[in-house]
Image (tube, rainbow, N blue to C red; front, side, top):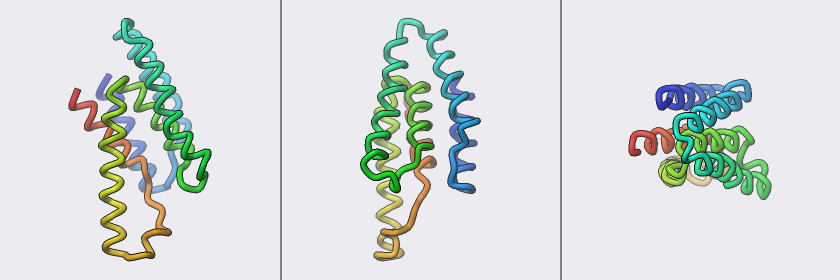
Length: 138
């Protein structure tokens, strides 16, 4: 299960870096397959995986509502994939991903100055890094 989950994260990262898009035709079926696999493999944790999937999506959907230009819906859907694959460990994935994104943003501010404030950087690689970190941690 982890190989499928990790492989999808790597593919989505590469696509987001190249094209700045998270394809629905990959992320949505992957989320469904991963969630179903988790429910079959760990039926006693069904509530954890369902809540993590929905909660992770909601957590990134709220900033999307407040500032639509700041985050794409692909990031929200990826968060749902992370919740489906990691369950409660999605919290660790978010913490690591957000910290990694923060370090990258500070680096850009230091190296590019105020021009970096208007730069858009893909968020999927940082979320995927956090997801892989949490996957290997648990």
